[in-house]
Image 1 (cartoon, rainbow, N blue to C red):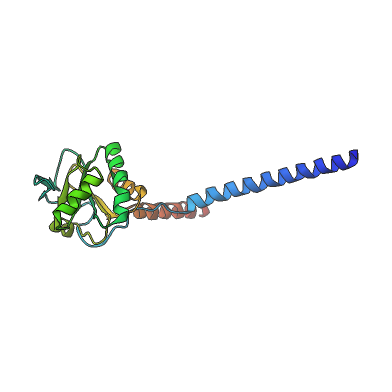
Image 2: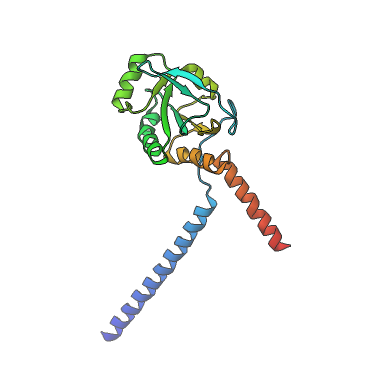
Amino acid sequence: MTVALLISNLLLWVLVITLAIIVFALTRQIGVLHERVAPAGALTPTSGPKVGELTKAITVKDLSGRSHSLGGAADAATLLLFVSPTCPVCRNLVPTAQSLARHERLRLVFASDGDNLERHQAYARDLKLEAHPYVLSQPLGIAYGVSKLPFAVLISKQGTLAGKGLVNTREHLESLVESMLTGIATLQDFVKDLDQDNKKTVKEHVA
């Protein structure tokens, strides 16, 4: 009886140690994957103005008829988010954009090229967008090369185009802010430059 108990305890300890080794190995593998998988930035289109270019001021009207100047130098960086009442992703992204704008102290403006004023007014009321301008302007979307929604444009205080692209998540929106802070056009460019620096370092060590 005593021998059987000792054998069972020994087998149990062997099992525990084996599981601990497996968990440790998996943890290391997760860390390696995290380093290898590049973060996802906003998908930047090739059409429209380029990141880093100086934007021109465009005067547009919001749903209440008030005029707003978008583009050019301003008191704060402007996050311009193009949305549509028929876009479900846009609806989910609106609270995220509001949160990011508060945290980063950005001027948040919603925009659309739709012509159904009452529908957009109902949409704005439903999402409680009264604190932010909501403008309807097809020329504005054309000026920034908007092709799909939701689409975001970030303009720096100096009036330069700091970032733009198709956005579906908070990570995509934050990548535009990172582009403005780092001066790198896109997050993909940053990862590419980082990979090149790493390869250069490895070659120097090998040499």
